[in-house]
Length: 219
Image (cartoon, rainbow, N blue to C red; front, side, top):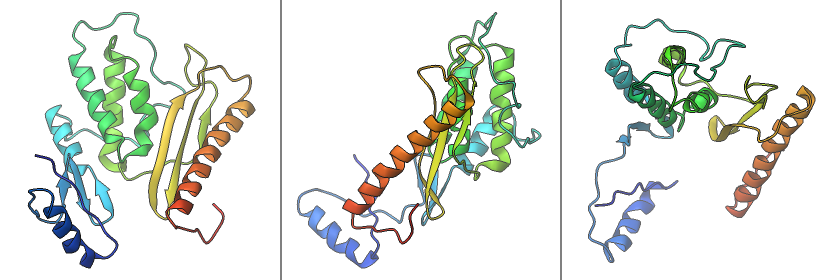
């Protein structure tokens, strides 16, 4: 069985679409979409608050105190000198954090950072991911703008870039990734972050143009 989501700007067109699809496939029209793959849907608004609540309950952090940042400034996470024997608990949390980045671009960087230690995590890594969860409790709706740090990784000295592109009030594209080479200065890191953002913006503008969507103002 395969479920599909049907959306149209004009709801009156949906019955005709179902009629045409029904001629070639055995199908059933279900109720309006409210919940799918741990994502709550309310019109154009998506959130994972239920998934977060269940995750916090699972690891007994429902009553944990909240924090305003997902990572301690200038601290980060480092390679483990002595890793824990059983890392399954850490991997479970990190995998859940990765899923939360689907509609939570503000934790993309820290989730990717935490995923680098899934095979060799220690107590400090566990404290780090739990801090991310304490941050998520109240800030899941936050977004990002162009950011760059040089250097970010204290081991490789490679900087991390990130951006979030909005169409109206909705974030439609975001990323957070480590450079493959070492930047020679913070200025170089900033220009590379800007170039990556401009490249993505250009692609989105061409896509919107092909779809017949024209922006009133230059981004």
